[in-house]
Amino acid sequence: MIAEKTTGGLQGFLNIAKANLRNFSMFLILGLIMIGFAFLTGGVNLNPRNFTYIFIQNSYILILAVGMLLVIVVGNIDLSVGSLSGFMGSVAVILFNRTGIGFVPTVALTIVIGLIVGAYQGYWIAFVKIPAFIVTLSGMLLFKGLNYIITNVTPVTPKTDVFKEMASGTIDVLRTKAPLAVSIFRPAQGEVHLLPLILGVLIVLYIVITSIIDRRNKIKNEFYTLPVSYFLLKLVAISAIILLLSIQFTRYRGLPTIVGVLGITAVVFTFITRSTIFGRYIYAVGGNQRSAKLSGINSERVIFLVHVIMGGLCGLAGMAFAGYMNSALPDAGKDFELEAIAACFIGGASTTGGIGTIIGAIMGGLVMGTINNHMSIMNIGTNWQYVVKALVLLLAVWYDLFARKKAGVA
Image (cartoon, rainbow, N blue to C red):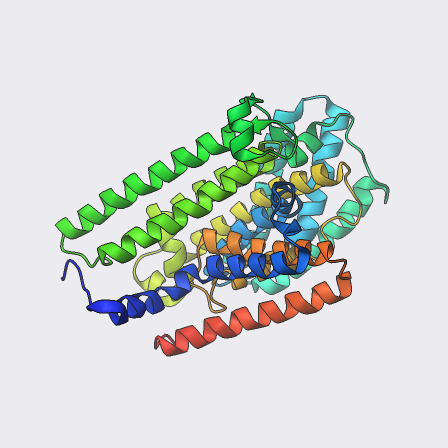
């Protein structure tokens, strides 16, 4: 194999960029959306408060998108995640109010219940071979009904603000009013919150160091690597995005708690999908289930475990939504499944399975959330927001099919 392939000059660089466009298209699209709306809103959409609330308002969808990505990659779909999330949010609040076991045990128990529900649905899908569409459609109706029953069609408010703090609060440490820091960062509320900046710098250092080590190992083993110029540009772009986001959090209230939860979730499942045998099995089953089975992979177990994971993440997302609303609502979860599915497809997941990334799904969710947020800033009604999101979803799937056809993928 060749250690490094280059084509001289600008044309070679453009060819490489074109070949890798699919991997970074969501970052470019999100950037263009923000720049475009900045002109339309007079820059209001770029203030640090708005950045914080985009993540807070869409946290539960982004968590669901992580699990939905696994379901879609394995070749299935889950229509029950919205109703199940609403149901699990109600379960969590009722457990917390009536048992007095405390918040952390409530979180753990809610996730465990979600895993059990995921196992229930996964059993019918993986072992009984009922199509996922039918099983999860049944689940959607089941959990919607159960949510009405346990809430008695009445909102249930947590007895303390701990759910609200999880969903809308911030990790408020390392604050300073030092004149130098204030003059540099120009915070929205007179205080600079240093934790997001420190974490951002550490994340950038980790990415840079691991990327360099990975590149050296590939060259040592004579694997293909990108040219140095493209490699450096990629590192600079990723580092800039992380640091800019960190600075925005630094300027307003600090790191949102739910962003920390989402970040841990994304890191864990990115590691699982990229660096574990189980993760490789997920893509193998989604790419060709018959071939995977002939290769010795227990495809039924893989599908079962993916739906178990989805159930657990529904528990986490349900608590995030209950915290955001500071109430468990009888009709919670409406359209959550559609938003999560759209986030995955917009983020590059294939409609036929086997292709997709956790980061892509999160970026797809942020694209949808950013469009909602920015159109609300412009006082554009919900009706038009649905129209725009519909077009974005259709164009994203068309782009996926076009790119795969051009690459010669069936």
